[in-house]
Length: 146
Image 1 (cartoon, rainbow, N blue to C red):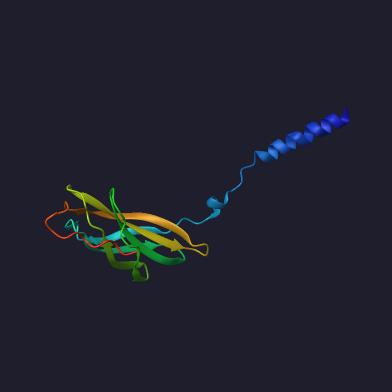
Image 2 (image 1 turned 90 degrees about the vertical axis):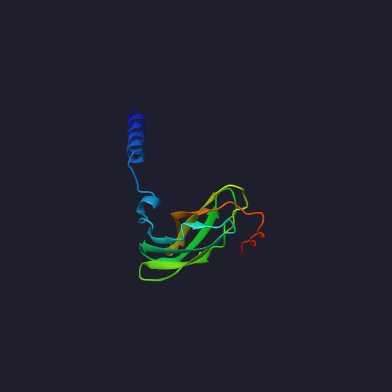
């Protein structure tokens, strides 16, 4: 009879220990960097695409790289470029791919921040640029650089 009580007692202790909440690795990790748009110009480009200038503020610890890319809705993404900066301000020229459709399109500018010793990547949307419809009377834009 005593053996049964010990087993029940250990079972209850096991249940009690199992119910103790523990912090996951994600909960212990400090929050990722924060990205704030300072400027994005121009707000509109021709259908052939072009270049956007982006300037952002990045706050957080151990920022390694800040990169940016333009992605055309329903289309391709441009080259990923590294923004240059000092302190918390980073900036650069982001190639925006052309719009090959006969209707207006939107290119979204994304910023990727690599931080910490493990190279964690955080993504933020900085803004968008309107692309005019493709003009078939003009030569097609060059393909994006890889």
